[in-house]
Image 1 (cartoon, helix red, strand yellow):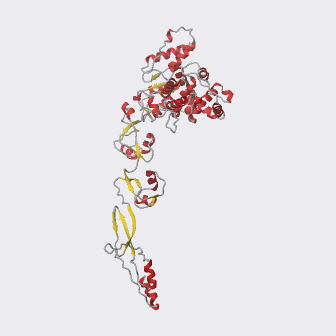
Image 2 (spheres, helix red, strand yellow):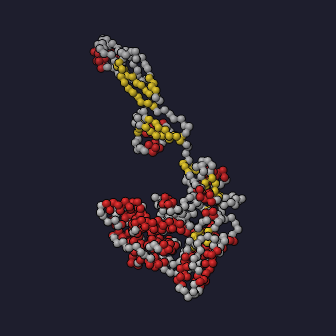
Length: 558
């Protein structure tokens, strides 16, 4: 009788709710002797998270149902044929050797597992799929992979958008328990319709349907089987279905593997409420009598410290906490939200913006997750503390279109291409243009420690900075000293060599028989040639001298 009365209260609540589906089966018309299981099923469906209760308008009565074994319900819904292989045995042993890990992830699942099983049963899908988040994320809705896949079901951004999961600066529905579960089951159902086999559908969920289709086509072309175990695939996908089978085996008989599963009641862990007013996450947790950590574990999609009423948020709360939330909200007369938004009109650093609007720069960076050394681009929207006289909530337009774009806080630069004209070290080259060696190597994707003539080097230099000219090469050539009309040219401080014949003749005291040669050096600066001139050097005739004066004369001729 108590169950029937509870069900009647639930239906009354649902009938007057302004949002969410209403119950379609009226229990008031059912005979009192009808199976109590039907009553319990109705309670479950009404109290499931799909039933969103507007706490601004509607009363929230306690919803309850008969306790039972959720694990047993999952076992009864198994439909996928068992996979038997050495990989399955290996994965079972891996879990069996890590009881602490199994305990942690099954403990996390208690909040979400009932809802997922409900969804699967309503879609007539195998309950093995309720175990898939154990493989994807260990049932952690905050999980984020290196490929940017997020949430329990690990949606990458693109696939999330394909399945209408909102991703904006205020909310990421890939982490939303309700939205991501619905999207994941839609995706899995589509894959099963595509391949007609759950193992292949699961492989496609992990690897992508296009890759699975190509693998099937390749096997068909070679006349090979096209089942899951016959396809060539990456190791991660090869182990994906065996991991799920291993978890299934453990759930089916945990004692066989020396493991224990936590008791999970066969009724909803949470209900969904909504409000039209902006509310701080900390305030919502306080009104519900929960810690912020507990609140976020059920509501991980809220990316900012404020929940926007304009988006009709779905707030998940445990049964008792939902009742407390509604009661406390009605009696609370203070400010629910302490945050608003500010749109940046021009590029600026967080410190400049903080000074302009009179807030703490560290708070600004922390709340908006702005990395150090970055500045905001024009048009960016940030969350800032709300003033005491500001009672306007954030609009729906801002909630949907707001974006935050940052860039490194460095001077504006221009790209330059420098053609090297002289072999030199990378250090010398970098010093000339006042940049670091690592920057030059990065911009040019090189690991060399020198640059060579003719090489084109990319530089990024600050706008307005004067750039020095690249020094040209030194060209050395020899010319006959007899070409007096052109003149012998030497670089200052260089040695003019004597010809061998002159040296030998001088040693013998004879005359020179051939003209000497001198060195011409042309040094180029910034595309023009600069020639350092000197007088032409005439050949010197050496005469024989007496031995007594030979040493003195030699010094003079040198």
